[in-house]
Amino acid sequence: MIVCVIAIGYGESEGKPHKSKPVSKLCDVPEADMPKWFKNGVIAAMMAPTALNQQKFLISLVDDSVKITAKRGVFTKVDLGIVKYNFEAASGHKCL
Image (cartoon, rainbow, N blue to C red; front, side, top):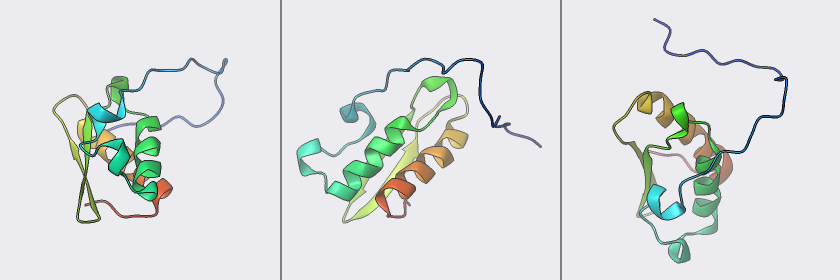
């Protein structure tokens, strides 16, 4: 069963920017308390493409372990994989 299809290539235009939710809505760690590697991961997660641009995920930091959970919504499980990949690629740390 195919869950989604990803198109690769160039569009007719460069597209348009989309708004991101503020860090406080996507992460339960205050920005002042974030290690640099964690902040890099959060920023990358914020830029990750999500279904319908809804960003329905929450990033937590517990004892140097990162947990990213999906909230309820359409394609949130697919989004979770995309967001985790972006976080791990930017931070160099694995997510639970």
